[in-house]
Length: 358
Image: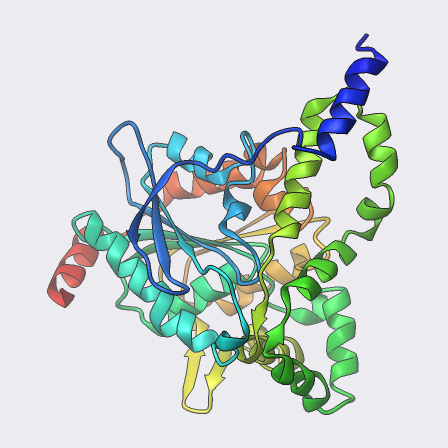
């Protein structure tokens, strides 16, 4: 049995240098501009299959896909032999208050898709997004059917807020009050500050926060468990904020009007995106313990994406757990691997269309 000395050293390390330093998977920049740094993860062998683009949600860092060893979707996808890319949005500040869905759906993400495709002889790209990263991926693909997209995977991405627990309550309350009561203070602040985002995310797992001292005591002799806990804490402590315009659109269009469920999302008065325009294969993954995007709210996408072949998989896990938890390898990631292996697209058509566009 490991003695008290080891337990004391583990706990001491936890509150000093940490149990395990964060060592991201090595990557190189394809290009780097504000809110659109495209990174390619290094491979030691030639890639096979279509390249993959990871699209993060706003208000988190790209570490959601690369949390720590054995909790890294990036490493898993590299292990499948794929070329893997990610878009890094960087910090969100007051100066970015006017950024909205349009910047991501019409510019940042489509540009990344085209560049990744060009890096691979204009091969179609497998797009994977978690949470609002899935929302952005779906809207981007629907907004421009000519993009070289092979498939879209959306993990923990809600469609119907009526089936989404706390969001359903917020929607009901919000419909009783003018939208400006919520959006005006956010606009004056320039968005949701990173400190508020971090507090809000922790509040979603309040039981975890309250029982953390007991967890540390129980696992004092288990550095692996402490390292997993520390990795989640590090992830939450580095969350950036939301731009004011983006948050207002989420609140108004997605929560109050429930437009992901109606099938048409109005980015602005002149730009509506019809989700039925998606024709490539789509994988939807929902977690049975997800308090931010219930499995039922994710599965609702089957009835919305009427133009695409859709696969829905329900797995065990929380919102973060289904993309980066210790069991994701055998649940969500396994479903992604199966989906990518089974995805069939008319590659010649996509290659010809992309080459012509360039």
